[in-house]
Image (cartoon, rainbow, N blue to C red; front, top):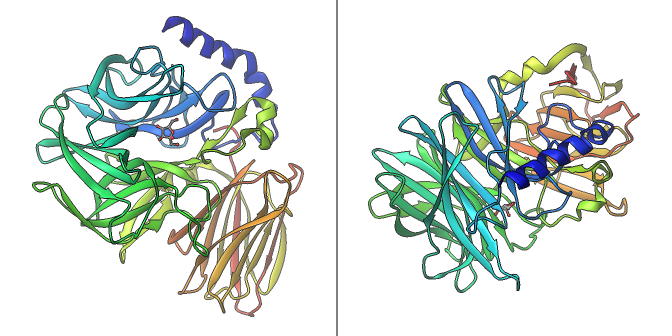
Amino acid sequence: DQSLREQAYQAIEKYEGVVRQDPYRQCFHLSPPVGLLNDPNGWIQWKGIYHLYFQWMPFHTGHGAKFWGHYSSRDLVNWTLEPIALTPSEWYDKNGCYSGSAITDQGKLKVFYTGNVKDENGNRETYQCSAESDNGVDFVKNGVEIYLPKGYTAHFRDPKVWKHEDHWYMVVGAQSADHYGCVVLFESADTKEWVFRGNLSHSTREEFGYLGYMWECPDFFSLDGEEVLIFSPQGVEADGIDYNNLYQTGYVIGELDYRQAEYKHGRFVELDRGFEFYAPQTTCDDRGRRLLVGWLGGPDHNEKSQPTHDYHWIHSMTIPRELRLEKGKLIQKPVEELSELRVKQWYDEQIVKSGVYEIERVSEVHIEGESLEGFELTLFSYMQLIYDQDTELLTLKRPDFAGGNLESRSCRLPQGLKQLQLFIDRSSVEIFINGGEEVFTSRMFADPEEQRLELKTSNSTSMNVQAWSLREDA
Ligand code: FRU
């Protein structure tokens, strides 16, 4: 354990200077100190401190035996890198302390995670494990809590635990023995003895038809009177403007009968319409807000095709978003604390038809109008966002990482386009549409010198444009 941890710290020491020199290094998006970051883990607020652990490969920009890295914050704006939380050092987690979640119980922080094990022939084993901490920083492992139940393959991982009344519940992402994606439910009176309660949902339910061969990173919570299940299915084919990423993330809304372990729910809806968004996790903070953070990346990308690879790091987290349920739809809004990032307002203007702005590379932009018809936004001569009111489609285009061919993602806006809020960092953009009704999250490798934001509409109703530069040292 000690020597593996030491090696990880040495990797940071060795490359942090190189990482810092990257013109694409993010300013207000959490990114790995070095190496690869993927899923958010153990996302929780405890004793006034937000803890965000993360899947971390310190030694290179690919996947492998993951550690749990750790960032903490009092305000969701200023973050501190903490010591390593979990190291893949035991027989039951030697090939990775995979994704999981955190709870607080009896004055301790307890995390649940998947111990990933592979033998010489690449055969996989999976163990649901736990570890405990008195301070949120130093963890003692408890070992294995749950072994693989019958009826599932070893693709069984990512426990998310919550309390309902006086019992604890856990959802796990799984693949059935006949290769369908599903989410499995467990129940416990004490967080130690877990009872298997069967599938909460699965990919061949009639609401879906078929929804893939494996579901990763489930999350279950109640919000505004309904019960939401978020998960990331693998193996769903693209269908028109839907499911265009390699793997998707989305949610269903319904009602869980805890006694019968029966979850009635509706159809699957994608959470984000951008190119890079996966495996999000939520928590409820002391203000009662349901907060979501996602991986601003995706699995099975060719990591070497992203320019940050040359600087020994890859991927980021999204900004924290507050979730609400409105008219049967999940709404995502950037948390209000992010206004603390603003340094200076550069624009607050009414314009008609078109405008060209020079903006800082790290900025926030708001655009608002009654009805933005024929809207076109071009960011740093690299990305384009276009709204066509005839097809009701809003489309984001960018050159792909591999060869620079244009690729696009779209969503439908039957109510029209009225409002956009953009959070722009050195190599990513998150675009919140109509108050968070849709979101496009994407990496963006534009020429670092470029500062142009171009706007156009086809009608002559005016739009209001506001832009702020954001702190570069958060
Ligand atoms: C999702 C995922 C999880 C797994 C983790 C490994 O991105 O594949 O299912 O626990 O990443 O890093």
